Amino acid sequence: MPKFYITTPIFYPNANLHIGHAYTTTVADILARYHRLNGDKTYFLTGSDENTEKVVRSAKSVGEDTKKYLDDIVSNFKDLFAKLEISYDQFIRTSDEENHYPGVIELWKRIADSGDLEKRSYSGLYCVGHESFITEKDLVDGKCPDHNETPQFLEEENWFFKLSKYTELIKEKIKSGEFRIMPETRRNEILAQLDRGLEDISFSRPANKVSVGIPVPGDPSQKIYVWCDALTNYISALGFGRKDGSLFKEFWPADVQIIGKDILRFHAAIWPAMLLSAGLPLPKTLLVHGFITSGGKKMSKSLGNVIDPMELVEEYGAEAVRYFLARHISPFEDGDITRESFKEAYNANLANGLGNLVSRIMKMAEQNQVKSKKLKVESDNGYDKAISEYDLKTASDLIWQMIAGLDEKIQKDQPFKLIKTDKEKGKAVIGELVSGLSNVAELLAPFMPETAKEIQKLIKENKMPGKPLFPRKD
Ligand SMILES: [Zn+2]
Image 1 (tube, rainbow, N blue to C red):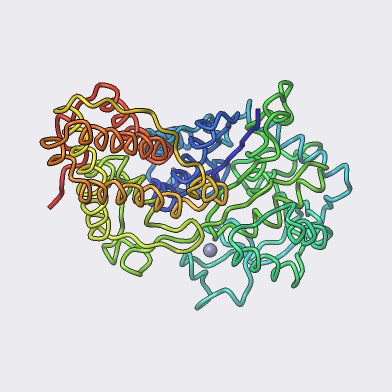
Image 2: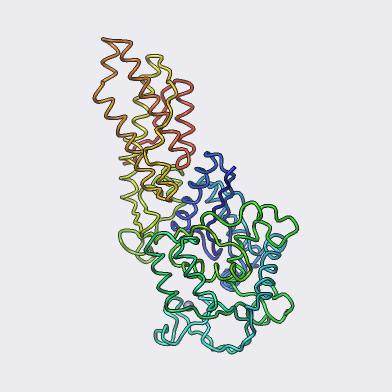
């Protein structure tokens, strides 16, 4: 049985999730559901990145104990995911000493055994907001422009990872397609970075300067640094470094890791270098999506254009939100969403499109006692190919082409009239429409699981819906 392992990044619990996080996770969920329905052994991982100073500071700023603060935010994450019908198999929390720590420690040891860790003295400007050193030329008026903070001058000992050593090897793996970066624009972006060369990076900080983190094996004076810790979640969650590593054996390497373009370098350079150093296989594909703007502008409180995924779910339902994210945001480029564009897409394609079609066909089927004959979905309409290329937009476009095709068939064959003059013929046409609808439901299942189920139930019971599937919004 083929296996399919898919991951999202682990999210920072220093605020609630925004539409970009909802997007990443929904795309992952659609792909996971598709593979499960296909009979593939599927594992879907998401989680939260908790061993960071940012989190400690956020907790402090609201006067809360870090653990309680984390638990509350993680429960908000899980609440949103439940509402969005996200079917993850595991939610990994990097503060989980039992499940996450052993993997990080094992990976560190392997990298150390390869001779790729070295203690060096380091000095520079450190931005707490970034949780990294930044350079003088990044500053505006002496402050980090992203965090509006004056960085601290730090001089300290760190364990350094010899990232530079892996530059050529990673380039080769990307170029040969063994480590596939999608889309092409991101692949070229990282190849250009690799051409400029990679610098060795700090993998630890003095234990007395950070309040959280996993102690460096064999050197308790140091704690493992954010990225080395966080990236490892993709294998620690599978039991890497633990006694029972059966999930790791079964599912690693990941078939696809989904990320946003802001964390490309970490996932396309640092992460593969860590794996290569440890003698582990690289993920097969890295799928890099863009940012989501609103009205062409970055979402911000001051512009008042923030689209909260939770609010959308409450107003329109999860299925509508999943629909919009899959079909109206490209997985390969930046996307845009406004309240207006959402409502327009909802009314045109769900209320009038799919919802109306289900009502019309099932009304005729119920009134005329027409049972559907199960027809096989045409397998060569490009749907499977689109999904295998992670192109959810094209795959969902194809479903809506089928919907439009069924609408046309009703227009052309007029079964509601035909049934009065030629009952046999009329019934045959309605039967074909019901079969077509059944095919739509089948292809819709990974995207809109509840709607697909509802349509299949109506077909089975030969009933029209008691109320519209998607009531029009004004
Ligand atoms: Zn900063």
